[in-house]
Length: 178
Image (cartoon, rainbow, N blue to C red):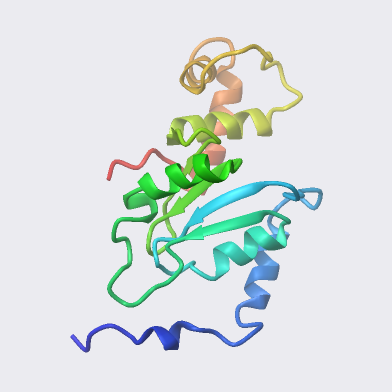
């Protein structure tokens, strides 16, 4: 083991990754504008520590970062999706709209709301279903995410659930067990 890479080698030249950032931005709806949104981002001192904040800023958000100072040893240590405590507290303290926590290789994400409450994968899938079927028969009535998920997955919205499950299966979305 050669040991960690010195942190000065993590610093990228201006413009590094710009084509990939352009691509990522192109995957969002053109009308998406996060202006005025305050987002706490915890990148776990990992792979997306420069790209994730840059993406959110490009989309217009005001970004507060945690876990964006890798030193070769601190990846996932007390931060990111492995430990969301700092992110949740920062969201409340900064009066942010939400928090986003990645893991070190940025293949896992957890979110919290403006009150620092974590949202599980089922809640995120329910939000995805609502967004995908905005004009469908899904009624707009107050319910928690778990209730909405149950309502979508069983009962009268079975066709919506089947189509949505196919979309999420394609994306690889699931409730992480670790």
